[in-house]
Image (cartoon, rainbow, N blue to C red; front, side):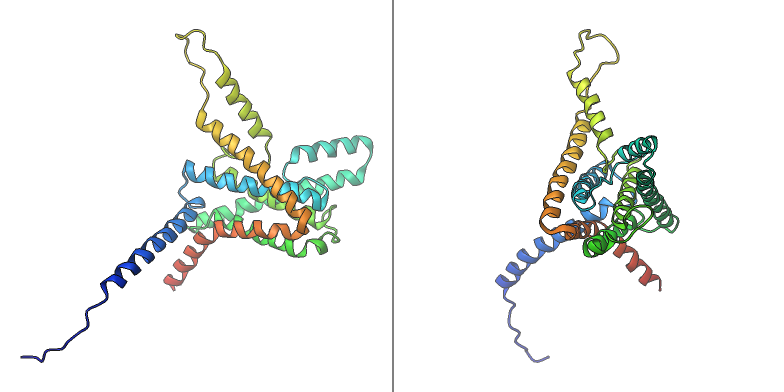
Length: 279
């Protein structure tokens, strides 16, 4: 018969406490990671598109309003810039026409860059096909926040490098959201958003006098909420961005860069882990 060996019983109370503390915490962390992963996942959902759109609308509002204080020019919507180019051309102000052209080309190149990055990731089956443009945008904003004062003195394509960088990032972001939502959501300019809100309000206020008339005019309440939320996020981001630039200058874009990095880092790490496993 083997000798009897006494083993101290485990402290059940300590085990229960440890499990009750760590398990919910780890579960919450895992849910947070999974949620962030869905925002830029390859498989899209209306919920993920909305939540990512709300966040990026706030970022765009902050960059547009705050950036105006830094570069004295709005950079997220091309309508006004194209109109100013036409006005200045008619007035013979060739230098201002070139300024507008530089901003337009920068925005255009940003949108093209997004298309290239997304298609590159898609062809290779990367989990980060939609995260890559956000990571690039984060790096550009970080550079703007750290080197903004120096970049302001650098002349780019007819305009300062700061203007080019902001227009490029706005084109980058607008193309990304347009591509992943199939043009249902826009985040960098509010003209279409306000127009769509007006359309839905018109439907909401319409009086269907003839109950038998088909089709019945009715507002899409879910769409109206999404549109109003996008507008509110853009406005709120604009207020925060303007206050940030007023208080700390170019460094106000650093928190925006960190936010974008947090949105995009999980799929990027998934790709890194996958590549390491294949090796």
